[in-house]
Length: 259
Image (cartoon, rainbow, N blue to C red; front, side, top):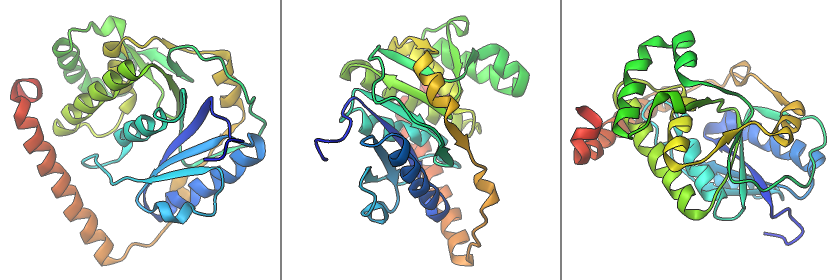
């Protein structure tokens, strides 16, 4: 990695499958334009496709999430924090449309563009999830009154290696618990719970608001890619493989996942 690159923070994303790899390249181009020297860390199934993107550090990652890959953001953040003090998670279907300051304050915690009371958020959008969120909180010795819902499209993590490890570990077990119980979306709940258990302060700083003001979220669903029958079969087989693997892993801690 060039010494001319910004070593204080990076952006990080997931980019599985062709549609998102194309979007990731477009994001990298706009990031280079408006934040020159800033690295985009990408967890992707085809890292070789980013060889000609000078501001990209791409590493190989396969989908771990049973149905969706939403929770797999944790692996990209984990990799990014090995190289940078702060990892800023952003969606792949995003463009940067304005200049980003080359300096951000280094304050430990989880900086979020959107923060909401986790109970109020669940009651508003998915009240059926509350029973599982309460169970997880009890298993982690947390009160939901002390937990925030974190908007997953833009947030940043700054932490020492111990707290980073705790955050990722708890996100991992929370994600698996939710997916096994049929909850495959809403990773903002898991992020908030994991941050609370790891002792990471959740806050909304002005510097992240400035980044939020210069990002444009695209609708990835507007880009249609025709799948072949073989690709459809591959995705079905991969789903059942991930489901069975998660079930086997969860049996090692039966009380946590099933009681």
